[in-house]
Length: 33
Image 1 (cartoon, one colour):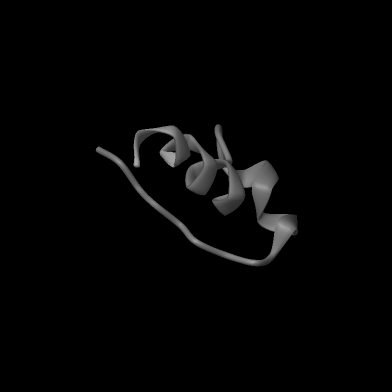
Image 2 (tube, one colour):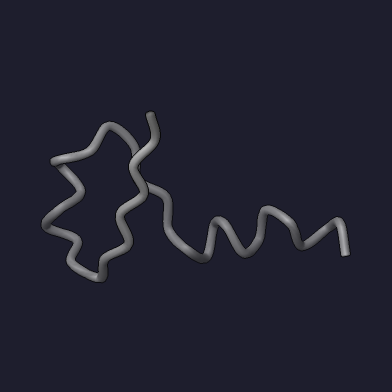
């Protein structure tokens, strides 16, 4: 099971095992355009 939560509230980060910033996601595919 996967749960995706999108929030601007950084105080929620400790509640999750893993957090990824949107800038990291956007850069991940930059070399494959």
